[in-house]
Length: 204
Ligand SMILES: CC(C)(COP(=O)(O)OP(=O)(O)OC[C@H]1O[C@@H](n2cnc3c(N)ncnc32)[C@H](O)[C@@H]1OP(=O)(O)O)[C@@H](O)C(=O)NCCC(=O)NCCS
Image 1 (cartoon, rainbow, N blue to C red):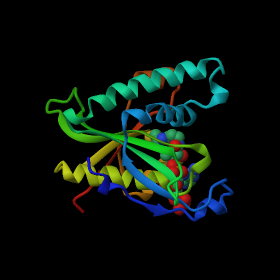
Image 2: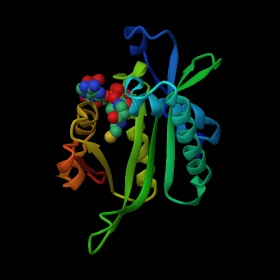
Image 3: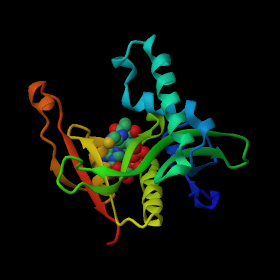
C-alpha cells in the first residue's frame, strides 16, 4: 500500500486535553509487522480493562495478541485485508507513537444464510484511552472506507455490543445504521449484551 494514502491532520485539541505533546500530527497509515507490539498494547488497554484483568496476565495477553497480529500482518498482501494504525508524530519527525488501530477484511457474513454474502467488515477498532475524543477513530474509519472503495465494494459492516455507548455514538455519527440485533442463546442465558449488526452504504 502507498504511503501517500496517509492522512496527516493537525491535532491542536491535544493541548486542550492536556496531553503531554505539542505540535503532533496524526498519521493514518498501513500497519507493519514491527507495529505489532504497540498495536497489541492499544488493543489490550482498549478491550481488556486493566481492572478486569489480573496484572500478571496482562503481559501474556499482550504477547498472545501481538503474535496473532503478526500472523495476520504477514498474510496481508494475500487478499482483501488491511490493518491501519494512527500515529501521533512530532512535527520535527523526532518520534511517533501508535495511538489507534483498525482492521478491515472482506469476508462472508451471514454464513448460515442460504446465500451468504461477501462484504468488507471492520474489526479491532481501538484508540488509546489517553487520546480519545480527538477524532482519531473517525479518521481510522475514513481510511477503511477509502480502502473498501478501492476494492470496489459499496458497503461496509461491523458488529458492536449494545452496551458500548461510545462506539455506538461514533458509528452513528459516521453514518452506520443498525440493521438488526443478533439473538444469541448465550446472551439470553447468561444475560450478556447482544451484538448489533451495523452497515454503511458507501455509494451514497
Ligand atoms: C470507540 C472508540 C474507538 C472511539 O475512539 P475515539 O478516537 O475516542 O473517537 P472519536 O474521537 O473519533 O469520536 C468521534 C465521535 O464519536 C462519538 N463518540 C466517541 N466516543 C464517545 C463517547 N465516549 N461518548 C459519546 N460519544 C462518543 C462522538 O460523537 C465523537 O465526536 P465528538 O468528540 O466531536 O463529539 C474508543 O472509545 C475505544 O477505543 N473504545 C474501546 C474499544 C471499542 O469499544 N472499540 C469499538 C468496538 S465495536
